[in-house]
Amino acid sequence: MYKIKLALFGLAVLSSSNASFAEANKSEFNRYVNFNWGDCPSTFKTPDNRNLCSFAKVPVNWDKPDSEQIDIMVSKYPAKSTDPKGQIWFLQGGPGYSASFYATHYNTTLSQYTQDYDLYILEHRGVGWSTHLSCPNQFQGDYLQYQKACYNELYNQWGENLFHFNTTGAAHDLAYAIDKSRATNWLPTYVYGASYGTLWAQRFTQVAPQGAQAIVLDSIVPSKGFSLDLWDENANYIFSGLAQYCDNDPLCRRKIGANSEATIKQLLNKVYSHSHCSETKFNRDSLQALSTLLMMRSVEGALMPTYYRLARCNQDDVIALNNLHQYIFEGVGRKLMAIEPDHPLNFSQVLSSLITHNEISDEPRTLSERLEYCQDAVACIPKNLLYSRYIQKDVWGNKYSNQFVYANVQHYIPTLVLNGDLDLQTPHSYAHEFKKTFTNINQRYIEFPEIPHAVIFESPANTASGNNCGVDVMQSFLNNIWQQPNTDCIAKLEGLNFNLSTIESQVLFGTDNAYDGSATPMSIESLESLKAQNPVQFDKHRDTFMRLAYF
Image (tube, rainbow, N blue to C red; front, side, top):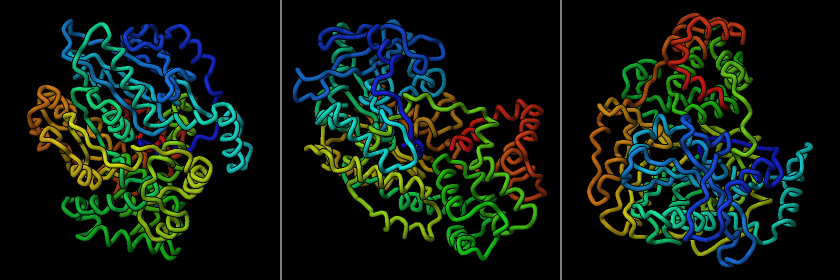
């Protein structure tokens, strides 16, 4: 659940390049024989090319271990120490995204762990370089028919086994892979899951209650009471929290007012009714999408100036807002940042649809309920994505269930739960409810103020270690899973920033000051020139530009 995404095109179920890697590094179905390690696919290579990969055969249906087998890909980054303390398994979110994301962070966010731990990545069944599920047919204009044809063709191929591409099957895969990795060298095992990966990790505790020494759940997706149908309601709940922080920030309070939430809602209702600032390219759909995107990507420094300029709406404001619109919604940002199309194995819409609409829909909303809610909401996902999601639900939903789906998870494995209080995708209110399922004193919850989704990646702090705060808290937990982790870094979190630097303001708004001042229309040529003239400053703020360009 790191991104809102609709994938219309796919590859064959197992691409030729995938099959060749699987054949070269295949590992027999035997948990007492270690993996056959070899080279990794290009998207899984770490910056130092130190990691290894292997493809393990597992049954598609773990209830019938002699049934048809599929491939799951495992990547290992050996500890730099000759005497590692243990192994950490990283589980990706989504559902439906490849876990290759983690491999790109071994020299940055995750470098803290590379010295003393063997780091493993398990590619979820049905995704990426594991046996990949995607539509063999091509989209030709009718999305409903496209989805129905896709489902029919995949069901004809897999039969009821199609519905074993699920969280429970992936949990069994993880338990098997951990056992296989320890066949020749037993080490303490820790499992880290982010977003949907937390649901995967929880399911693992149900199928393998002694399978790991501890688990870390970052941005919790509870098994019960959660639903992606609540996305818009959750986004507006988090906006209320962001507005409270704005009220307490000197700059934001001065610009927006003492009651920013009410002020912004009144403003947007005027814009939605076409009674204010119709000169900009923004309308209800794009404003709601913008609010969702900027909160989800934690770019409040661009969000609040947008509202401020929209309220004033003079000629310079219109130019500035139209610059922002073209950067995000018209592809200018993608062109400036030279964003290449995603690798086709990086996402599986099929797996996403299966799990989302059978295991993450405990609190459903109808299409009409969601459209009605979005009439005056601050944040909502775009209507075309909403319609597409309900088509996917109609085709892929209500296909399977089991004893673990929509049931509370209870286990005795030591657990650390991390959540930001500005997490749009998995709001901290769910973590508060999840705490009620804890069964012993070694299951702990830590909340991070002013922090969005995926805490260990989104919690910069001014500390001596130079790590993100979430990384230090997790490290403290791994050092001693029986004690309360050290959370001193929370007091040193960098937190929110309601202002943009000069270069960020120039790129996004065409002005030196995001809130005020004259604005110049920005073409892709002028943006390229600005980038070339300010290479150091541009690179310093590349993360901001990428977050908004990748829409």
